Image (tube, rainbow, N blue to C red; front, top):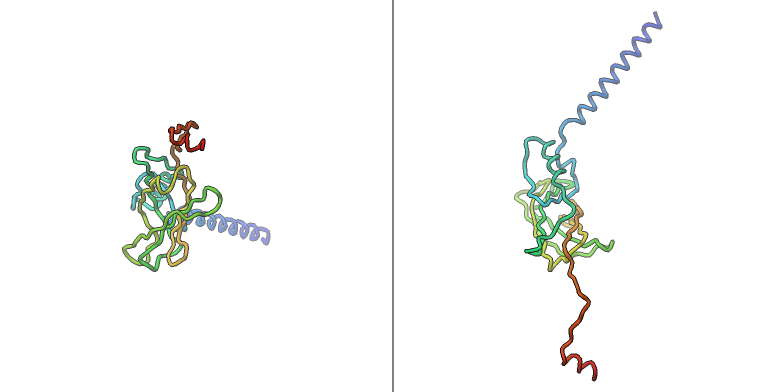
Length: 185
């Protein structure tokens, strides 16, 4: 009789463990908030980022599909259009964030630009927007890092590259007669 009750107890414990594991898996399968999945990240995209979707999991999936890390230059306009969604590490207790863009191509951070973005209300957990980067200011074929800060505290960061056709030089130089004479003297 003692053997039987031990087996029954072992089966009950095993069944209970299986139920707990299944409940844990089911809890993980529930849709998480995009703010939790992408906390502290800036997702960049070549296409417009939607602000809503049918469900949380559909929105997360859409963001993953839209994520772009290499942006090709619009050669006619000599610029790059970058859409982005930033998911803050904590709710923002301010109405303004500072966006900084660094060149990290050489391994060192060199600040290229900084600008303010204003929020509608306090307590925001994300920001969706876009920006245009001009070739004249940013150059071409650069690795960039975008950082969002509020009062010196980093809220989110992300990296991306801007690529395009670099300037071509023939290696030939044409001098005028005046330049030639000045060089001879």
